[in-house]
Each structure stands twice: as structure tokens, then as C-alpha cells.
Image 1 (cartoon, each protein chain N blue to C red):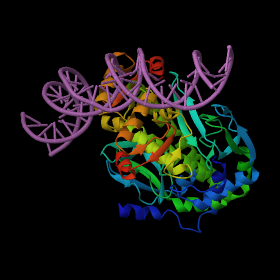
Image 2 (tube, helix red, strand yellow):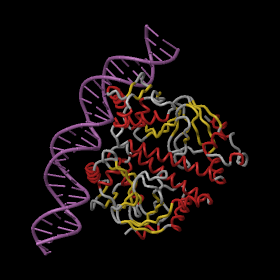
Image 3 (cartoon, rainbow over the protein chains, first blue to last red):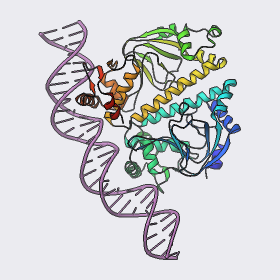
Image 4 (tube, chains in turn cyan, brown, green, purple):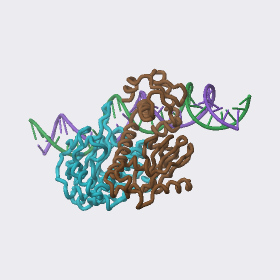
Length: 225
Length: 225
DNA sequence: CGACCATTTGATATGGATCAAGCGATGTGG
DNA sequence: CCACATCGCTTGATCCATATCAAATGGTCG
């Protein structure tokens, strides 16, 4: 479904807009050197604490990274959609595990190869830095979301996803309510109730549980805090 | 503030001085090129959305970065103690404001100078990346802390601070209860109550409200989740 | 000593979690 | 093609951790 649009939009992420050039070039390294791979829905891409051997770029589908806490709860660190680069969250070992949310196609490149290339090509070095920087910014925003109310978290999530998946207002959520709950630090019941409530407020519409129509962006902006 | 900034810019003249430091690590670059500056308790170092012109390294004292949310609440992003480098949290503008928690001495260096140096020196480039990477890791840990219980957050904070400030077990908190609350996403009352409770559990001791003795690390480790 | 600020302690309220059913879509075996 | 099992989601009732409101205590500095 997403494949055609995903390929067309590679390398650009409207909204973040910090360094489109750097992002483009960084993406190119993976585009040029990357090997395509396919992961089925709910299969592991890598595990927490494994050596971070590869860098990935999503071609189609959605990926989640997560950690399972001591008490058994799962916290999702991020969702990655077509165009996003992941597995550069930290040091030499992965801090999070990664799984395919849907059937997913990625491009894979050896981290060591890119790092070696960066030794000689400081354009590549700058791109690696830029990717990490953007990841940091994303983590900070996610982090700020966690101190907001349930309604604000859900609204923020919907606005974010609608901006990131190609298209815009009527869009499809590729992840389950449980995934959303684990991403937002809420329970599935609270996410569900909040969605219903937003629908009653006429802020959104839910033709199906996965399909979202942003019906009143002004109201959503206000509810976003 | 402007006066102090002017002094900072004397530290580096483009085109000069690159050679002698060419093989130094980034932290050392700040040590070598940095201009000392002093900020009084509770004064601003830089504001959110200002251009990120400088990089800072704490020599003495403590710094907090924070954001004020729409509803007026303040969220502290990080505390920086001697040895820490800050102001590399994101892109070309600061995502957070920075203030001195106590009277603080820092070394300041022009960001553009370091970035320019990184163009020619891979080692410096790698160090810039490493600093950003570490910051990302720190943000992720802070983020994971926010989904824990109040007790776990406070215990985690105390263990973290005790590890970071020179010394170890008996150590001094340089920040107020309000600072801690805003860092942990709790209220001042909850932080206070939790501290008292930890004292009753004989896990810690509080000779004064700012002085902390870790009395039972095993118990604290358990309470940390 | 007195004023002020930070911290602690107490009483009550509440947002979201938890426990528990119900419902609708999808798929499977008969 | 239907009956039924399953799964993901929604809805309802109740509980609890932390927030909020309020007051007392302690420490610091003029």
C-alpha cells in the first residue's frame, strides 16, 4: 500500500526540516549501499543488547523499537515509517529491540562500513551526526509528551502520525491500540476511551478503529497543549 | 549577559590555532579553546529558541536545562555537573533554556569553531558525535524513568546523582526539591514524602534536606526496579 | 528577633489504572 | 455457507497513586 508513496518521498520529512540536504545525503548512503530485506509482521529485527551491526532505513511498513521493563511492562521507544533511519539510538549495543509492526521492507547497511566511510568523507560523518541529532530531538519530544495528560498525549500522537505517514488527514494507523498505549505510557483502555472522547468532541472521526480522520485541527491543536 | 558572551568569543579566531589542537578529543578542544565564564545562581545561560552559538563544559557548579510548557509547568531536561558538556541537545536552535543552579563556572567555545575544526579533524568529528550520542542515551534513560513509580524515580535519581557528583555515598544535592520534582515529573510534595519514606525504610539518611547518605544500596537497587 | 523561603506533613480530590464484560470483525473447521 | 472461536477494541465499575489544597516547621539572613 504505502510502497509507492514511500519510495517517492524518500529523504524528505516535512515538519522537521532542519537540514533537508544533510538528510538527503545521509539517506543516499543507505540507498546506495543498502541491501533490501523483508520482515514479516511481528518478527524481530534485532534484540536489545545485541551488537549494533547494521543501520536500517524503512522502505515500506512500520517498525517499533521497545524495551521490556523489570515489571514486565513494554515501553515503545519509537515508530519508524518509510524514509526513517533507525538503529542509531545509542552506542555499540542496541538500547532497544526492534520489531516489524506490519510486513516491512528495509534497506540494511553495515554500520562499520558507514563509520569507515565517515573517516574519509566528512560529509558522511556529518550525516551520521545529523541522524543521531534528529533521534535525540525525537526522544526529547517523546519525553515531553510523557508528562502531559492522556488526552494531550493521544492528540499529539495522532497529529504526529498524520504528519509522518504520507497523505495527511484521512490516514491509517499501522499499529494496534496496545502499541499506541505502550508508546504513550498509558493503558489500552485509556487510549481507547480518549479516542472515543475525541470523536464525541467532533475533533476526529474513526470510520474504522485503525482509520483516522482529523476533523478539526484547530481544536486538536488546542487540545495538544 | 552580552558582555560575558563577548568574552567567550575571544577564545577562538577562525583560521588560527587549528593545527596545535588537531589531534585532541572534543572535550579537550573545549579545555584548550574554551573561555572561562561565571554565572551566578539562578541566572540564565541561554534561552530556548536562541541560536545555539556556543558549547559549554561545566568546571564547577551545576546547570539545569528546562522548558516551560504551555500550562506553565516547568520540565527540567537535565542537570549538568563538572565535566559534563552541554548545549548540544539538538539542532541549530536551543531546544531548552539553561540556567545555573548554583554559582557555576563553565568553559565556553564557539560551536561553529568546533564544527569547522571537525571538518578537518575526524577525531573531533567523532567526539562531537559521541557527545550527542551520550546525550541521546541520557535522554532515553530519563524518558524511561518517567513511566516508573514515584519511589522508583526518586531512588533512580539519588543513585544517579551519587554516581555523578565526585565522592559517592555521603553527597550534597545542589538542587532544590522543586528542581528535583520538575526533573522527575512529580510534585515537590511527592518528592519530599518519598524521601521521608526512604529514610523510614532505612534506605537513606538525610542529615540535612540537601545532604544524602545512601545507607542501604542493596535495598535501593531493589527499589529502583 | 523577625521575616522569608524551602521543606515537611496532613487532608482530600482526581486522572488514569485495574478488573470485568460486552461487542464487532476476521478467520477456521465442519 | 454457517457456527463458533479468536482477537482487537470498546465500555463500565471501582480502586489507587499522585496531585492538589492547606498548614506547620525549620533554616537562613538581615
